[in-house]
Length: 172
Image (tube, rainbow, N blue to C red):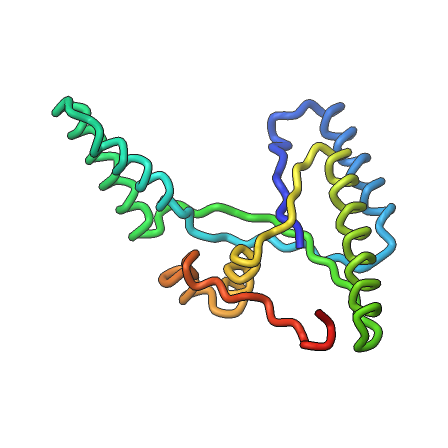
């Protein structure tokens, strides 16, 4: 699964827009395996921003700067709490079926999947889009959003509860 950046087509001239759309069409025509594209709206996670500002607040001695930092932190927490700000994440999903129960079947499928991902990444880059494979945590958040949107918005999966991937004993 790849997370894909976006392009602002509104700011492009007609020539640029046509060029991008032609490249995207060529990319889609080059794909000879099933893919799924999805766009998911998720609340923005500002925890990292809040933590950085809290650390900066601890080191700041100027009372005016401290007051300003405190207001930034409160504002960011309020945005997260009220979920006023959402981000749209774009994904391309593909798969590869494992044909058999042997280690070799597993690795054959894995190599085939890696080739598909590489093809997608190169094609997207030619269009001007950045893509990267999602982490296990991001995959879990994506699935959580798809299966239980309301709960995922109020109780998103946190970093510390990431579960390891489980693989059959005879494959690893």
